[in-house]
Length: 341
Image (tube, rainbow, N blue to C red):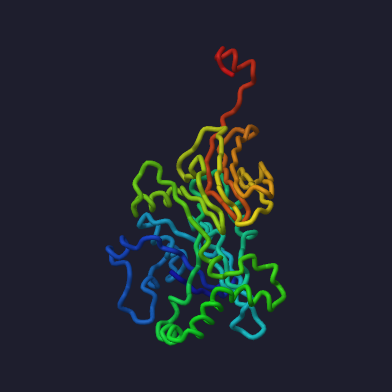
């Protein structure tokens, strides 16, 4: 659901979209206006501040129907401009990021292929021990157009001739990389195939013993039980499951299994965040493409903490909540329980 706005305070003339992962309850309740021509069917929704057709209005409507609001492509700056001498700025309404429940991670634009530095800083900013303010992560492919989804009349003409069909498919697959090379920035394009990069992202939800249905997937998303991967990463297991509501007693053992992280061996790291700060940074050997990682935080201070595990360019988990109780000294432990360790 896309919204465009002009913000005179920030001189922000932008557009952004929120994903609705299910619209069945909205349709059943008659929330959409399908009868007004050339108008988005959600444009009449009003937010709690009295404004119509805003990102906030969409997010509040989704929450009303127990659906998680997602901030899509919260940073997406394009070097291609619609104005002479300018630079178009397509980004999320940054004032509304706090009202989102999920951030889009590992997403890519056609020119700047990845926005990971901005996004991990944003994720850490919201890694606060407050279940009401936590943000989960999901990953979109942003596969808007392609050989099969182009405007049908053009697609039919292009597809009719072998030469035009082959040329168009090659341009689509390699267009972003080719443009970067023309700009002298070949090193900035790690994926030679644009379509391959766009479709290399995955979002996983933890269902536990529940069957895989639309409702159980939505419930997992509502509870923040997600992790995301990108590129050649093969996800096998992660624990304990992230959650907005479940609080684990500390210290806990965090584990991650990625049987393959790259198509070719190269150096990488596994990073553990606690409350948005790095508490563990473990390098992995170049020769081994697999990551089998475990970590126990034995030095966490008492209180509620938020943990996330991050493999740059490959993996990120949603928040894990851990309650670390105050440790008694050795004399007090043995006085209270002679069998205590």
